[in-house]
Image 1 (cartoon, helix red, strand yellow):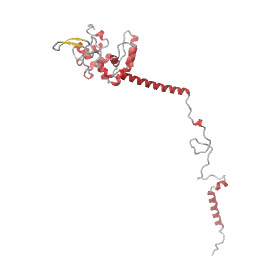
Image 2 (cartoon, helix red, strand yellow):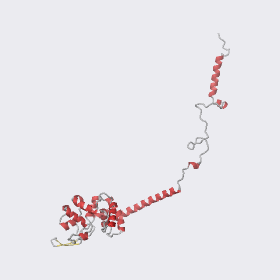
Image 3 (cartoon, one colour):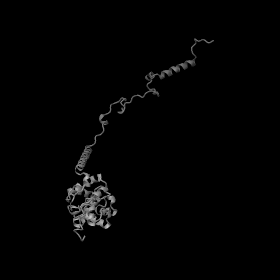
Image 4 (cartoon, rainbow, N blue to C red):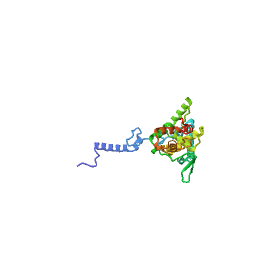
Amino acid sequence: MANTDDPLPRHGQADRFGRLVGEFAEDEAFDAYFPSRPPREDAPEPPSDRSDPRDPGIVGEPPDADALEPEAPPPRRRLRWRLLKWGAKGGFGFLLLLVGWLALLVPVSRTAEPLVPPPIILTASDGTPIARMGPVMDRPVEIDELPDHVVEAFLAIEDRRFYDHWGIDPRGIGRAIWNNLTSSSREGGSTITQQLAKLTYLSSDRTIGRKVQEVPIAFWLELWLSKDEILERYLSNAYFGDNVYGLRAASLHYFYRHPENLTLTQAAMLAGLVRAPSRLAPTRNLEG
């Protein structure tokens, strides 16, 4: 029978000593006695002297406030930006004033009204007309009822690119300027929309001021009216000479037929009258 009071065998004492050393090594106090010991895998990293301005939890020197502020733009760039903003505000204000002026002084509904006073007709007791005083007028025309050659005749003479522009034709203006400089004849660069604006809202004076006024009014009409409506109102109010206004009245006055029945030759003659109605009217210029 073995004696329990005997000391542990040598190999048992070694195992116990090893366990004690391992437990002591796991203790944080071991780091204080052995500073050269490599850090454990689960030990926290020591604080660094480098400071990160994005992480306030790390201890270090505070960053320079001037270094964190964005660099101010140069004075020239700031002046350019201010001028751009002022220009945008000024342009927007001018646009509002222009739209207000057009809405008050350029009502689109006026283009559908007769532009000349109605004539005075003297009749007999039975209602038969005896004499007429004043302009010769008739009801408006409709594009859908006119033959194609009638519409094409007016477009070929007055405004070839009518269905392609927005009221102003820069190409036509340039062509007119070139022809006026290189030849003795005079050619206008106004579109049908500009001519409707002149007939309805402006005078017939050949001045630069009137031309300048035509531009915003033409854009305004193009904004609210379709191309066919603009052409209808122009043909229904254009002057054809001999105190005759409108295509229907001109067709009845010169050819005794409605514009829906005009031939190609008759349509071409009426379209040519619009350029110089007083000089080319058949009643005054029988030789053509």
